[in-house]
Image 1 (tube, rainbow, N blue to C red):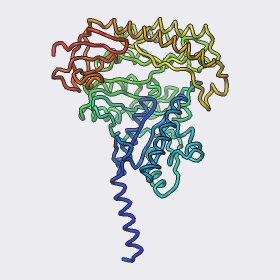
Image 2 (cartoon, rainbow, N blue to C red; image 1 turned 45 degrees about the horizontal axis):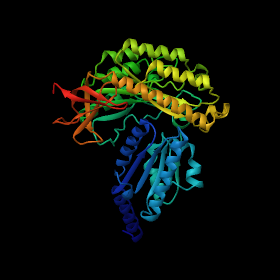
Image 3 (cartoon, one colour; image 1 turned 60 degrees about the vertical axis):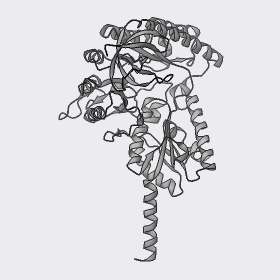
Image 4 (cartoon, rainbow, N blue to C red; image 1 turned 90 degrees about the vertical axis):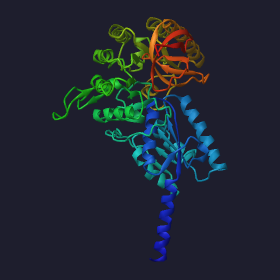
Length: 471
């Protein structure tokens, strides 16, 4: 063998050895879909010699899965990137830093070239390219791929589960979004809507149950839009294949095993059908909990938001939930101070909260995002102080609503899936009931991943406290 060939082979072996021993540190921000994406990334990188670690200081590669929904989230991620760059300069000069997801697509040039905070930028549809992009960085180049896809669903990839509890897991059933809500960047950062093969979803649910998981959450930007082999116009795309909508998909997953709980997120009020509600009511292991974002209680604001429904339509869906599933819990999203919002329009948001009495709500001040319809069409003209005051009023009502709902549970007994130890005491366990309420109770000799009946004796606005009965 020539000397040059021996040296080349030695270099190759060294690279392969380094690859096998490399450590990956992952952080996820924003929605559950980002966390699920990180598990797909971990699986892809594991196949290419990376082992996940919970210690950033020993990482060879740090990846942050980002969110661009609100400016506050972006600023937090920037701060984190600066911290990692300081670590890189002081302790690990060969460390690679990258961003994934929504922020990657929107700020690729700024983060990569101008601020020089990252070495690689990878969009949500390019995770399969990560290994080759990492090798580009290893060779001394910056790497970027933010191309969006109309087909990518990562359907056949078995995610590496990053939640060490081993009780609950996420299953992505679709990617992208076709709703063009005027305040939202998701259609521009995650691409068009496409659904995943239902058989791969069922297979993943079966695998998770066999691995000991007892709850799965079906994820999509708008799960009610899930369609397999059905066009947007309702046409069958391939007569040789079955057609599956979201209600039918839920039934398929529910039939995997009656001991496997099913949750889902997120529903869109304009698309939620009674068929979905009837399937939920039919199966005990489909949790009686729906996250149904209202955003505003005023029809004119909803029109400016391009939400596709009125206040009356939304309340029709609430009434359907109450009629078909009387015990169901409902949570929501609410935005305070959207463009041109008047005091009267804000008052209608407060009134819908009092009318529905949500169990829980995610509540935010409006944050204008670049490239959205709202940025182009409307003026962000509600003063910051007014936004803050309106948000505080929303929070106050929701705090009262949550307490009212929890007090209604006093004396009742719920089937609880045990998830682990309480944050406040290792003598207490916690779990959730079908309605997604967190319940804390004495540890005893109960183990996680089991179901117990718990009678509620006390409550706060956030937690139910009880005792195990009929163990």
